[in-house]
Image 1 (cartoon, rainbow, N blue to C red):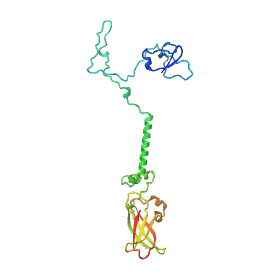
Image 2: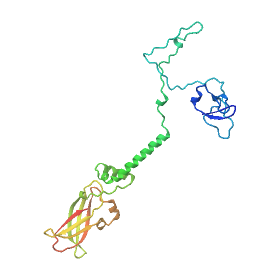
Image 3: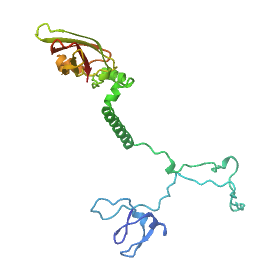
Image 4: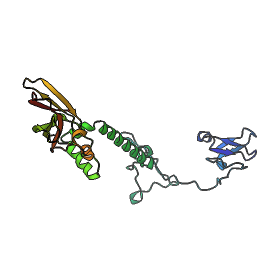
Length: 273
């Protein structure tokens, strides 16, 4: 707070504690004038340049303090102060319906009142929720293979992607590919060539990429005569079909062209990677 000496116009900065001892009166350090600081008391200084602070009238009726924040209650065992008997010159207290008893009133301190939520609180809540959602999305992306392969979460994620039009990442699970049928025959148009066909079913509940197929040709003693690894592009020509992968529970036919190793090749085996 600020006040101004009415004689030398010196402006001083003071606090409320300095006004208590002399009921608002202070002494100017510059001209030694005693004046009532409440007459020019101001919370902030006006914009410079200025000469005088705004003066306040000190001869008005005192304002009423109407916003009560606390009132101590009398202890049950504390004796009430003795009330002097009214004299002839001093009328007694009013009784009956005109008397008002305030002893049962209690007031909540200002610090105990529930503060109102401001827009800053709402903004912090929104930011925290957004950060938590972002963290959850990062964790879900890091564990996407586990979530897609989960029998409970996988179908839920697939249904959600079907609604919004997205595609789940393909999760490789070669152990859940089952070879249903296989056959080998001479190639109809290539000399010394073999045509191998296989029917494969995806027992998983989710789509997985087409596997790398390894075919091994062996003789009657089980000795390996030839081996070849087929990439998905070698037996699935359609790019869109390869990108969509083998759907869960679906069956597909695979056709492979290999060179005939001779009459000794009597057995062949499949494996998926």
